[in-house]
Image (cartoon, rainbow, N blue to C red; front, side, top):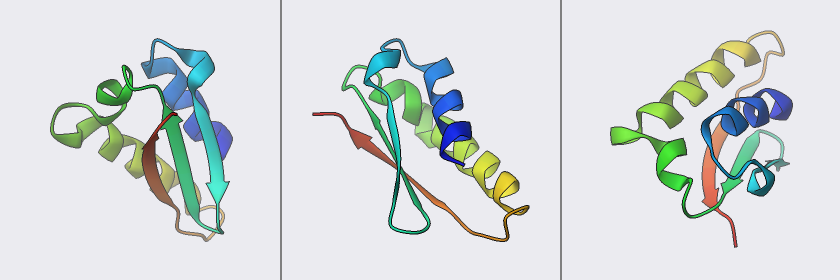
Length: 75
């Protein structure tokens, strides 16, 4: 599932080398991007991140799991 999220996020951002997608805990996917790309990942009124969460939710039905997607700022 992290590969799917990483692919989606890397297509959105400018600094692709600063994208880090990790599976924290069992069902939490953390997306870490640079400060400049944070707005692109979140989108206006959170539309982009909501769309990413919807895609993850639809794709996770095959695995019978529920994932939570969180966006973090890279350090």
